[in-house]
Image (cartoon, rainbow, N blue to C red):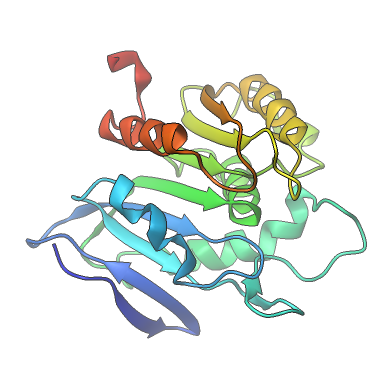
Length: 221
């Protein structure tokens, strides 16, 4: 297992970690939250599959108080699915064999924290056949999602969701309501809720690790 390395690629700044060997490797994309950067998600890396190519890009938009985000500043409190379209398009252009020849993008999973989880949900609704499984940490489903639920586009998808009941940045009701939206879209949701703020508890860290250890499929439990 190699250490994470910082690279610049077609205008992106990102940190990657490649398993030992020649691949191709399943890919896990790690998406930071508002004011984060390419280093923010590595606290979760030890809970992710060691045989996966990990990619953690820096957000596209500088945040006013430092760091980066995944959509420009908005007048609304919560972003819409369509607000993430430019970021989704940019990620689709990034996640290719041309840029990562050792990556197997038919086995693509995502882990998003806070706003990064919202981007992950937008990606899943706009590109429902691209993800094998996903994990949303302290996040929320973007507004304007109803038009994307017809025909259960996420049928069979496995999504892990975790949230803290004392989260003051993203109230836990957003996660609970989001689970209902995901189930309407056909996803299989594994939910871990605990008495913490805008972070993961020890129990939910363990649940995240178990989720990926099973390949995102809790039917094996």
